Image 1 (spheres, rainbow over the protein chains, first blue to last red):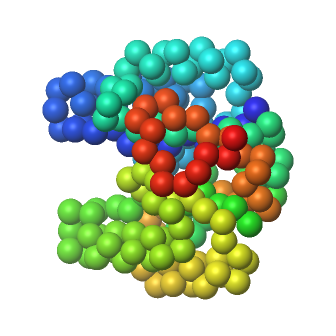
Image 2: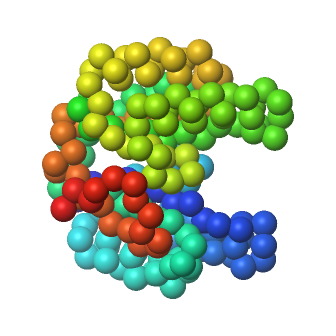
Length: 94
Length: 94
């Protein structure tokens, strides 16, 4: 399965917020490619996705943090355009 | 075509950076749904996509701003999970 994960972590200027951000970032980085400030992408198995989601759930503050995952069986139908700098750590899908 | 647009605009604490951010945000908002801090998504025609890209190109600073667009012929194969707050301005694709 191919996923794009985007997050918006609130109050990162507080001790609690920056701790949540650090842990969410590190967890995402272990499973996915970091391609932009709060954006990750990559191929991942269902088992690993469940594992990652469980770990993230420990850090995500359900009432304020937004973590959205776009999922797709494979990345082959996904094309990517870079309208700004092209700083991509994954191959383009074209 | 269905797209997910993510941006990372640099130095938004400077006059120039915050102007770029404001203009990029407003442009994206005219064509797409704003679902998270720097994330937009939506259905868009090829013509409108080209029109939006031209306008964005006026504001994006090519050597520092990152704007990545994931494109797909249709959104029907895309599924969405909310691991945090569920604040989605579009219908879920399930």
